[in-house]
Image (cartoon, rainbow, N blue to C red; front, top):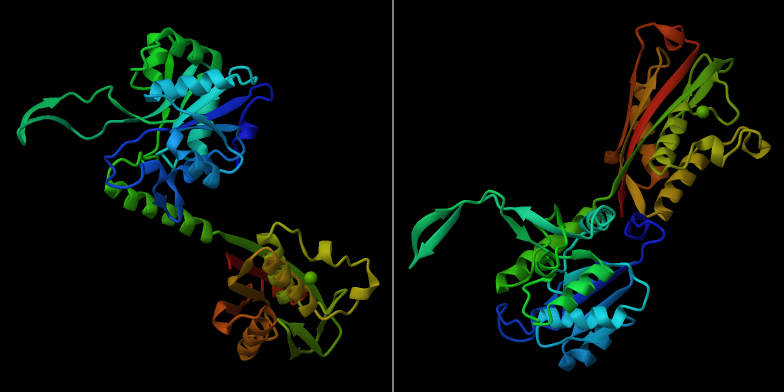
Length: 389
Ligand code: MG
């Protein structure tokens, strides 16, 4: 959550959520802020959106037991007869608590995002008041008896959202200056008190649940967000080189391949498996093989490289990732890889613990150019994608 870090250390920001209303447009039954949305009350979503910031909620006196049950630890303040009265009650109750900023939010807007909140808090560095708005893009009609009676200009028009953000003392003074309790919202009061109100960027998803259909739309947005979280993917690449030395076989991707040379290395010098292992460490931002298995440590001398790959796969699993797929390319003139590629694929899949279809092993020459072309050694590159389990 990025909210607290966006504030200057000296600024103390209070969140004030209004939930005392009794609106009935959302259909029969409970007031909309208490109706269930994706398994919990709308208001609980709204409160959760501000995690990390101190928060008070204005409630209707009849809702106290319900609020205490579903918002444990949240300061509850009984609202007044109108929204403006409720906000003023809360501001008066909190005025001695040392807050210098306040975000006033509608409890029926459960989908407000951290980015929108951060933009508001930042705007308060430059002025006494800010609120999110969305420029009107649709044409606006004036209608009479289901007939278009005229076109209204949309230039300069915005759809207002919450939270509305203020310097605490300024908005409290604005409320005190208009004790009627009739103001439409806090921006109206702020403007009446002469405060400049900056329009920050609103979001289509920050909808106010008003009509019965809004609940289905909000559920769809929450499901989409959950899906986006589940789709967390990570990519890594790895590159390795080992020089030829005397010998009659070499290890490549976990398979012993007969050859007229061997590969030189501290471990078994399996260049393909090393590149793949480094790709996994890379995807996890966990360095490389040398960090986890220092070459200075004699216990890894001559080690079979499946130890390294197994460690990287388990590290990924401990972070909640599995191998989506991987692709290893060996670069050499000889030995020919083709006859062994299927065995290499099967062996890597076995170590990783995935089906072979997620593992690719292929080879190329470098057209006799460079150190691989001169048959001084073998290079390998690997790419891996990790997906959240
Ligand atoms: Mg190596």
